Length: 389
Image 1 (tube, one colour):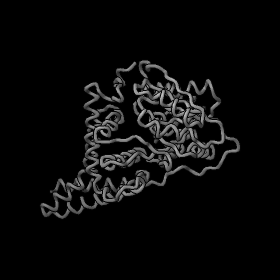
Image 2 (cartoon, rainbow, N blue to C red):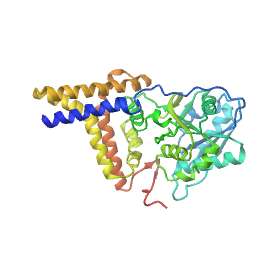
Image 3 (cartoon, rainbow, N blue to C red):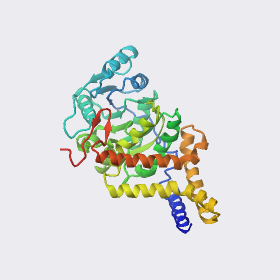
Image 4 (tube, one colour):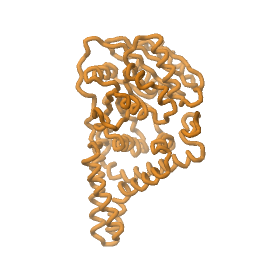
């Protein structure tokens, strides 16, 4: 009980720090900053890398083509070796719905040292340079649906606030029981790792982006040598933000109101793969960092309910009280993201269970890495960083 009491003390202290000293990551009020229409609307090229996206494209692509943007905008969908007719479907959707001009092209298999997504982005950016005078690039995933004013609001925010990059964390789909358990926590934990307020602080060291929706200034992209400088990145959005901020660019990241992912995760398996494919890469493939992460997750998220239950069963008031307090703080910090996702608040006390799942996904990510199957996605497995050219 003495050891459990001290662990509960550490856990409660950690939650006190997280609540007040980690950029108020748990709050959900970081939305697009103040914005005003520019005197002249700049040209924008929308680049959509797509690989086997026929399932979601009818729900996402029409929303891009229907953007109500006062300036010139053109969409470039880059078919990254799809086997399900993604490119043909995109052309048919454009012919049926009209709207913004759409170019569909395929770059072929990526060269060694490139991830498939960034190889497609490279090709889309090259087409945009050759065919448009775009001042901004909207890099958006094929499963992201945009409200009709999304592009206009992004450009207004960038222009009004002098930002080189504006990224919104799309609202992910939450319908199934597994999505309810896993998805809100994904955004919650991302914010804990990269507090949005710290990301948005000019001159701060923290940098991150949400790859589903990134408005990037062309000059900033050229200055940071995007995408060549990040061609191997598995976690391409965070790496992109670091490259832009590291070369003097001003970046902004926040939650979206009318930008949503339409990708369904019908069971635990797809959600598990979404997290485990990049979790160990986030830890820089370092076993010591992995051990520290596992220990930290256990002390911060798992120890509170264990201390409460074990202390109560043993009649030990100290660990039970401390564990209960830490669990209560944890639960309270999770409520805002559940409200944002319009989910029942009774899910908040289940956060330790979700954290245990994320811990297992992280360990599995490391196991798959050392088996040579790390960073596998849609039929491709990328080499370990030290093995890539």
